[in-house]
Image 1 (cartoon, rainbow, N blue to C red):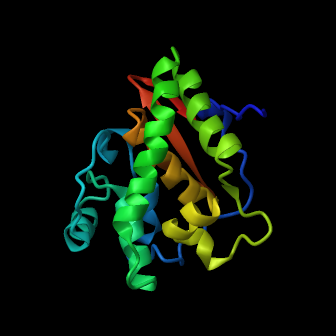
Image 2 (tube, rainbow, N blue to C red):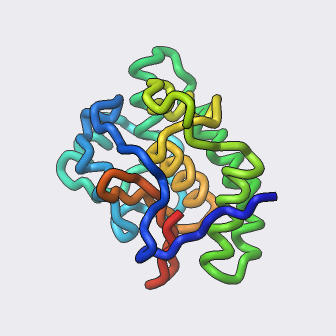
Length: 193
């Protein structure tokens, strides 16, 4: 099994390419996605129901507001695919979290916890960047990313944050110049992946 690459924050990211803010997340603007911080992202259990309009207003007023970003993405996907079963996809994220939780809890260090999450998602479950067709619109819709296990760095980071957070690990998306990655944090220690 290949080991995921764990990078310290000062080493910088390795993905190539750029994130195009003109995709389906346009209502938020790229700045909203890139400004989530560990302190404001909101970790732990998420409510089972979400009012999208309320969540969007909260994000418009405060880009660091505590919202379930994966649920927001799924509701936005439903705008493109009427009748989308958002609850089923949220259950998929919860099931992934339930499966990886014991591994995360068993790891003694933050790098070990991140390795457990990254190995589970990317090596075992097969989530990956769509290197063949980066601009395929399906890479931007979280429901399609969960179905196809292919996405953009930002949607894969959202999957990692949603699963990791639901499994008890503080994970958030981090916007960097030209890149988007995930960051796990425990206390003052942080690991980008």
